[in-house]
Image 1 (spheres, one colour):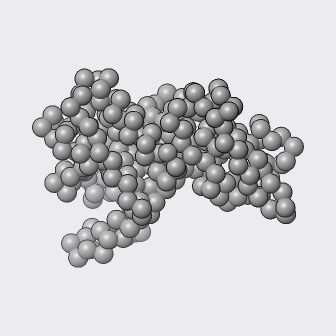
Image 2: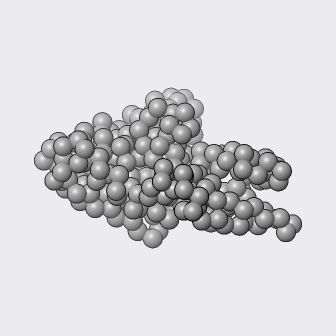
Image 3: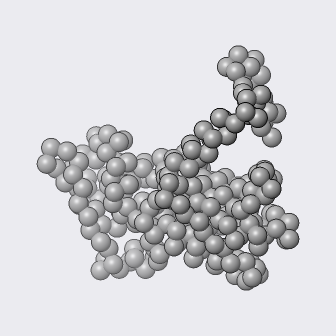
Length: 230
């Protein structure tokens, strides 16, 4: 049992798991994730380096730059307004050409915690995780908060764990749950945890009766997915 917090390529989820089952009514989703951050990083670089032709860089190059150079700030506003706290980095984009980035390093992942930076009105990931805990019965909240399991490649940014921990604890205090002290579990293989878990479930003998064929999907559409897996 615990709270699964996933930040992957296409979407972020906060899903309570109890007794081996997910609680769909307490599951919350955010559409700002890894792919969104890659596009945002490109926009930041176009503004910062208008003469380098960033728009022409392959998506793969931007993604590699994001993975190698970006990190999550523990004090975003403070870092943003104090150039002395920027940590420049250089990245080779091919043919001996280097990009030098500064504040873009920590601005890139920030929308996961502040979707408003992209013009979105939804809550950030820490608030999403707190909402999932709050939606659960009071008798289960402490148990779930004791095991907050991280998954997905977007949780691998340096500083991500510390920032989520700080903000989730802050959410608990501000909303009158000081006794909730979330404990984050961040295993080294969490970047591929969703795929690994899916492959394990798919290999179970008990799962074989739940396979959905292409013909079944074409006949019934997405409605069948919810009927089979809910």
